[in-house]
Amino acid sequence: MLNKFVPDNFIVPEKLETEIFRLRMLTTDDVEKDYEAVMSSREHLITLSDEDDEYAWPRKDMTIEENLEDLQRHQSEFLDRTAFTYTVMSLDEKICLGCVYINQSKQKNFDAEVYLWARESEIEK
Image 1 (cartoon, rainbow, N blue to C red):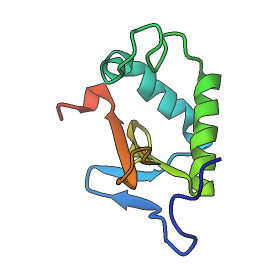
Image 2: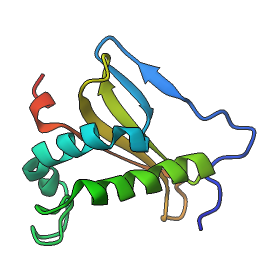
Image 3: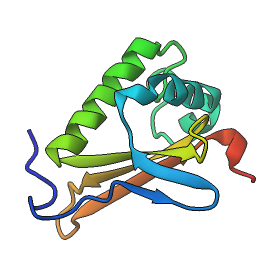
Image 4: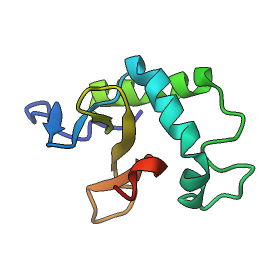
């Protein structure tokens, strides 16, 4: 298990809201919206991976149950303060627009690594 990413007295931001989207903790309650966003953007997301199509995330045959397992892990990491995954939602919470991942860096001299992906249909807007 990783060490806590931030000290206990650090207040982890709960959300960020703009005129266009809401950024908040990704939870297992988001599984259907997250899965739909991931799979509808699969071809785009694979281009962000260094892996070939067979091993790239998300796999073509990824199930909603596997996605739920990922969300359970991300939610646990957030609550344990070892990593922070935020979902990006439309303001009405009907559409997942993407995710932001804030992880402890594995590289010396860096504290964090930040990754994100956006739903393919939202990229040009």
